[in-house]
Image (cartoon, rainbow, N blue to C red):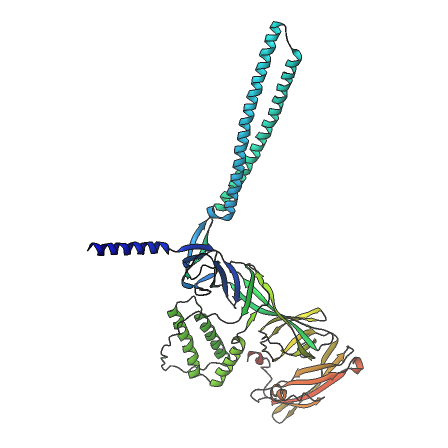
Length: 582
């Protein structure tokens, strides 16, 4: 019995001793922000923390996390075989009394108060000196009186003692005045600092955000831990500068990113990645719910309504996968979005749905990632900051574009091919010719190896004028018939041949109630097969011309065409502008 109790007691002692030996040590650190991936509306930040000390259980407190952190996104990983047990998030209030600015003022006040104590000590020392000189004055006076009574007065020696005492009194007066001035200045500085401290500390409080990482270190050597978290108020969008020169045989493209960085922490010398993907941190698969249907009134949506619905469903799916939302809410939102998409499939025309989905995937379905080659520093601030992703040169052919029915200006347009490995995302661009800014435009999505077009502004050296030459009207049976003749005059003041796409239009009737026919065109309209089967059928005219150099005035190039329009003589023309609503 006694032996059993002894063994039990010894075991308990060993357990307590072991527990005491492995009690967690705590390390407090900020770590260093080393890697950042910027998405369209948030960013994934990685802080690297160096953990030192012997092997065993540790608690790492990573301080000064940013204001815009998404706490549910916190995760950590360690190198080697060290094990991360948990990562938690906490906040605590920091009052004005603990602010670094207030502490700095306290240190200044302490220094000045020390100076006051030194001034007081000098004043006491000065008082001692004055007492000593005062005693010397009394000694000199009593000595002079005795020697005068005895008739042995040593005048010269007494005079020297008196002058010495007077000199010291004058010196003490100057020292006291100086000490009083120093005291007044020091007390004034202390008073100002105390008022400033009160202003800083009054009503101030902020939230300190921290991550607690619990791990077991498997080595006595330093171990690196990577802490990951998402932040909001961060995003980016593409912007381009397109440049060409006098040769017009290529386009230099500067691929830039405008970054919005308002996370609440600065990124200094980080490895930066730009991405259009959506971060996903959910380990569990979604839960699919039954799709219950019933009968109701028939509803046919227009093509644009279907496309808007598909776009909204796509956005809801993205939003539902954000890490902030609890899982049940996320799965419910995904099911609601899927229900609406499937309802379209069950009730609307398949070709319209597929066309809408194709356009949406073209705009939103591309996921690209760009890793910048050099370390980047981005401060947290309200204005946007620009980064360069790449600079490439692509082959291009330049053509002039004229549509005198719309504008008198003639534009230059580059037809280029993306020969780079980059995907050019939709975005605005600035165009430069021969180093001069010529205007702004918008670049559509361009995949690697794909052709694209970009405008390069107005060329004032090329001019096109449209004139109505003749118009005739007559009645044929029950129809009113009109014939029109137009002249387009092209002037080229340049010293080189140019390619020109000259565009104009006739009216067209969707329902055939108005009959329109092109009677003649000189020169012939474009023979491009795609144009012939699409735009021409809707009355759009196009000539692909080579305009010689210096053709002006009577030498200008002239294009003419005639068309015929017939309709019921009891009716009038209307609805010419409805096309912009289609």
